[in-house]
Length: 614
Image (tube, rainbow, N blue to C red; front, top):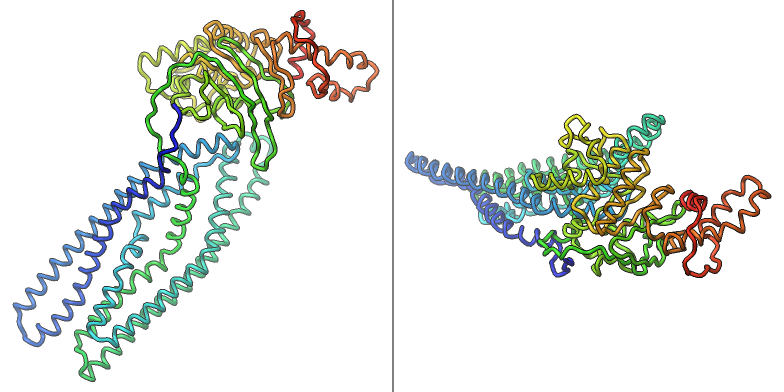
């Protein structure tokens, strides 16, 4: 079923629903800040009522009321903290699948750019929600309440507190201005360092064998040094601003005490007002001072949220799809075009049609676009133009969870996953007797059943990350079984025999013959002659263009016709002319094609030539 475009982006949906939780957070924060007036009011009443009346009963009642207010405030803070943790966990549960899906789709469309940065960004945003760094943001809107209370006590005290608060807020803005650029540069450098480290670890075998660790380490260290430089610069600037802010707040508290004492001497205020105003001003300025101290975490969370917006801002949550009827395997490529971001074309107008039960080989020189075309046909990439249709359905628009039941794909990089052999073959479906029977059936069809039985735990053998415990040929044969699992009507194999020995190749040829007899449509990239016996049609690509397409005999004879004029001159040419000969065999020259009438089957020599040039 086609994906609908009516559903809003996932991040927009989640943030809209999160606002329902933000309202209670605001009210809880308001209650907490109102109850924080308790200390100042208690002090004021003790000076005004208890000391003047010498009433023990009044002191006891005031103390009980203050204790009740403080217990209530503590309860509200506990509820607010739990609500924040719940919101963070809920956001993670909703967005993590969307981000992983978006990352997988991006990595599939842009090989070499795979990383899990969006998931780390989501963790950073979630941790910000559950850390004290968010409290200044929740408490700052209530600062006017404390300033208003100070104004009620005496206007002079209120103006002094307000001016001091403005200066502290200006210091917070200065901290943002001075630390934003170095922190962003440090984050970018740190991200590049992570990518380099992950690449070195992922390719550890090559790094160790070829002595590449030292130059890679130097490049990684350069990125780390740049990140450390930015972080140190931001930390130094932030610490200076924080020290100035702390000094300013202490001086302001002393100033308000001094002004309060002056007003007491002039009989314009009481000692209780002097002390209470100092307490209230400290509470009013506390969110601003805390924000300066936690600014690095705030900036990091803000940058992470922006990156999430870039990744998931247009990505929609997965919705249940109605499965389409099982296709029969009729496949059509209609003027497929693929261009890189810079505009350079990888594929230029590829078109062909296959009926159920037909097998087609993709051949051509390296860089011709064979693997790119296979990825488009499998639905892993979206073409820049044209369509790939399976039984009339565009595979790029088909929901992947439904399309995957009907497409078997063996990529050039086999890409097995950590888990058991059974889990990899059944594509990590829930194992039950019916699923396991299909696993064994696929393994037998791929000719790998006996090999799997010879593993330490058979089908329950853990193969490690990327199938690390298996040889290259074993991984390829298990990948073939995965492609054949569920009897898909369309099977796409990218160099399925590149790592196989003679036994594995015989099993592959037998499997191709069996699935052809069952009516499956097969598209394979081939580099050896013996596998050509099972194909009905051949598509020759050259520099992204469709050079030849037709029956196997027609294409072989066309290639043989192109090479005959050159063969006569081979003995007269120097040895270094071989590339030119190969270019001619591959169809670089675009001379007139011979008639498409039935021609005799080419000799074994012709078959060998075609296989070698592929």
